[in-house]
Structure formats: C-alpha cells, structure tokens
Image (cartoon, rainbow, N blue to C red):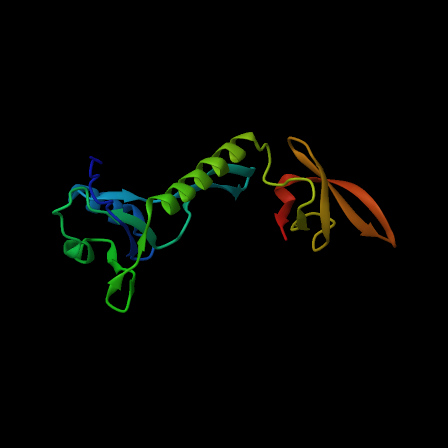
Length: 173
C-alpha cells in the first residue's frame, strides 16, 4: 500500500513596501511563516574604488512566503508591517512550486560563488565607460583585469589601442 505524503505547501509571492523587504521578512517570521528573500552581493563604487560589500534584494519589493503549518492561514500576511499584500491573479494568489524556488536558490548560490572568485567588478569582454580622468567619456572593451587597473581596448585615431585605466575610473556601459 503506497504511503500518502502530506500535500505540498505552496510558496506565495509577497509584495513588500519599497525598501521594507527586511522588515516584512522579520515580521512574517515572527508570525511563524517560512520566508525566503533572495539576496545578491553587488559591487559598490566608493571613493576608494570598487568593493563587493553591498547585498541587494534580487527581486526588489518581492519575497516568497509559505505557511509553516497546514492549518495556518495566509490572511494575516497582508496586514503585516512592511507588506503591501500577496501578488494575485484576480482573486487567486500567485504561487511557486518547490522546484522553481529551488532553481532561484541555486542561482543565488552560483552567483555568490562567482562573486567570491571575482577580483574586480569588470571581466574581459565587458563594455565599459570611462567616467573620470583624461579619457572621460570614452567607451571600450575590457581586455584584461588586474588588482588596481583594467586594460581597456579603445578606438583611438582609427586604431585599437589597449590602455590601462584605474578601476575607480570605470563604470559598466
């Protein structure tokens, strides 16, 4: 006789108030919900140069929530501080299955591993804009990356020329 597995609890898409995702997650967890807020670490430009300290929400204003217990209601979610409501199609709440959420988690983990391996925000082949210095305003393609400088292939006087530019002077085009 096959064993009956309990029904899978769906993940709901929760719409948060602008820049209030962390508050919404904390308050939903306090109420006993399971919550997932995908975060990505991004490069941030400071006066000293580029640093990779800035975690950002992968989907701004959205998080994923599900009931921790089968008898738990989704009704209190919309009155939670930091939450605007659930995303719905008409009156039916939008849901994700476990496989889709697992794919999002895998993407977040692979991006985190890739970020840990990067020494600079620029990779060979990236299009960049020079934002400071004597070549300000020019665009080019990254050909090589070092700790403090990036070699950029520029079109100068009708020829391709590789120029070393400080990373602090570059932005992604």
